[in-house]
Amino acid sequence: MAVHQQGQKMDDMTRILPSNCSKVFIQRDFSDGTAVKFQTKFPAELDGKIEAKMFESTINTLNSMFCEAESLNSRNYCESCFACLTAYLSYLCFDTHYEKVLKKIGKYIAEQNQTVYVPRGLMLVDPVERGLRTLEICILNESNGR
Image: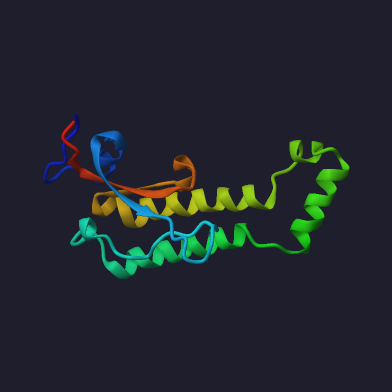
């Protein structure tokens, strides 16, 4: 098992398996219904590891991106009608609006990990990998005792 030591490069921390790290889970916020939205309350486990404002900014950005993915507009309506008219074969040729936004969210999480979280010994796990149920944050320099 890899252990973080003083002087070790932060790039080496990304080689630590997330399953071997302590984890913090940010739960979904169902106060506005079933749309994908995560709680913005700062977890005590991250105190001293990242600034609360930076954490809240990341969560708010993710929440707004998920809101964009689930928005209904004429483009989405036309996309759905076209899919229906082509017996949904059109989905073999192009990504849906929702899939495009999920890819955008994945890129945002990767960028945040590279610039903000990994340098602080943390790593965000894409919520898509957890079925959109929770946002997982791994504390890379702490072992979970397994």
